[in-house]
Image (tube, rainbow, N blue to C red):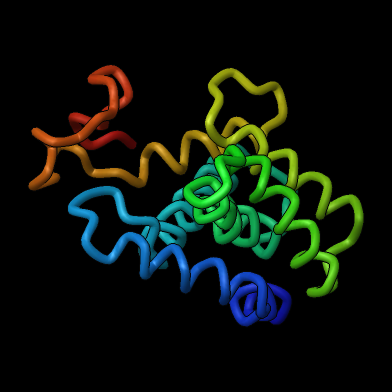
Length: 158
């Protein structure tokens, strides 16, 4: 997965991820760590296998790896992280050899990853994978969490 490694090593990704990691160092729950990004990628890939989707593993992993790339801009400039993330992802993906079609699909998934009910499989499934990656039922900071109860994962879902 040469293109995916290029995404991970891309200077924009490294800068944004590094700033986010530093900003969340003392956060007690729902950090946007590499572990979270890879959990989302693996869940998204499993959903793709289960649904028989014709998208490459690299596209699925790239969408997951980049879905929160705009979080630091949200914190510093107030731009919704899905908007900032889609823009940043476009720059990164083009530099890493993804086609315009792949880039557009990933950008749309990033833009939609906070919404339920999307018609497009990648958009809908990135949302599902992102939410499924959180083990709220085992979180030591659950009492301080500001997620609405209906958004929390209170049991293992499969």
